[in-house]
Image (cartoon, rainbow, N blue to C red):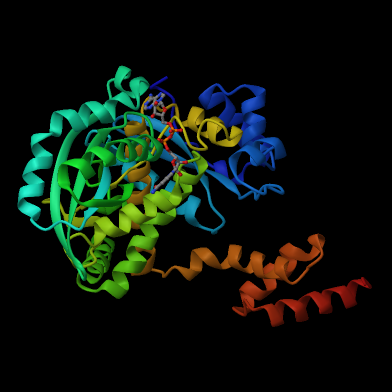
Length: 426
Ligand code: NAD
C-alpha cells in the first residue's frame, strides 16, 4: 500500500461523488464505510449512547487533505472543520513540501500522567520519601486495575512526587506515569489514580482530594519536521517572510496565540475527524506552549544552509485508536481506516504534520498576499447563504460582492433584492 499517492491533481475541482470514489479506492473502504464518510448524521441510538439527553447530532463538513507524504508514505487526511480555507491550505503546504521529501516525524512513548493531590501534609519531604519507598506497591495496585492494558504491553511504569505551594499550604502531588498504548488513556489513568489514592492517603497521613489525569502530557510528545524549498514556496523573500512571522510569534504572546491557533486549525480537524478529544489536545497544546512560564509557538522555523525553510513542531499528543468516540462513531471509524494508521503514535505524528503544514501555510499567506484573499470567496458564500439567498442566486451574488470588495450582509441583501427584482422572483 506504500506506493499509493496522495498527490491528486485537481481533487478540489471534482464533484463530491468522484472525490468519494477516489478516497474509497485509496483506502479500500467498503460501501458502508464510504457512506459513513458522506453520511449526514450519527444514528440517534449511537448518539444516545455517547452523551446524555441526546436529541440528535451536529454534522460538520469533512474535507480530505491531499498531498501529504509522511516518513515516505502517502496519506489522504480527513479533516472535520467548519472554517473555510483550512483543508486547502494544508493540502497546498503538503504539496510544497513534497520536493524535499515531505514530513519526517517521531514521538515519545504513549505515557500519560495521573495526578493524586495530597493535602494537609506537615512535612512534605518525609511524605515524598515515604511514597517513593512504596513505589512498587503503588505500581502493582495501579496495574491490577487494567489487566488488558498490561497484557498489551502497557501499564503503570513509574511514580514521581512533587511538592507544590498553594495559597493554603503545601500539597504533595503524586504522578503515576502510565503507558496507555493505543488509548487516549483518560479512563485508564483516572481509574488507576482513584485506585491508588487510598494507599497514598495511608502512607502520607494527609487527605487526598483530586485523582485525575493531567492533560499536560509532557511525556507523550509528537514531533514533525519538513523542509520547504525556496523555489517551491515562491522564492527567498517568502522564506524571509515566514521567518519574520515566526520571530514575531516567538517574541509576542498576542501574535503567538494566533500563530498557535493556526496550528490547531489543522490539529483539531484531524482530532475531530478521528473521534478524538479536541479539548484534551487543546489543553495539552496550550499548556505545553506556556511550560517555560512564557507562552511560545508550538512550531519553530529556521533557514537551512541552502536558504530553504525548515519547520518543526512538538506538542503533547493524547490520541487514541481504542476507547472514546473513535470506535463507536461510524464516520470516525471510516476516517481512521482512511488514514490506515496502525498505532496511536502513528496517528499522533500525522496530526503533528498537519499542524505544522497548517501553520506554514498560514504564515506564508500572512507574510505575502494576506489571509483574506484565500478566505474571501468562501467567506462571501457563507455571508450570502446566511442572509437566506435562494440557492440559484448564490454564485452570482458571491461574484458580485467579491468583485466589489463589499463582503457584507447588507450588501449581499441588496444584491439579492436587485437580482430578484430583475428576474421577477419573490
Ligand atoms: P477507554 O477506557 O474507553 O479505553 C481504554 C481501555 O481500552 C484501556 O484501559 C484498555 O483496557 C483497553 N484497550 C484495548 N485495546 C487497547 C490498546 N490497543 N491500547 C490501549 N488500551 C486498550 O478509553 P480511554 O482512552 O482510557 O479514555 C478516553 C476517553 O476519556 C475520551 O472519551 C476522553 O474524552 C475521556 N476523558 C478525558 C478526560 C481528560 O482529558 N481530562 C477526562 C475524563 C475522560
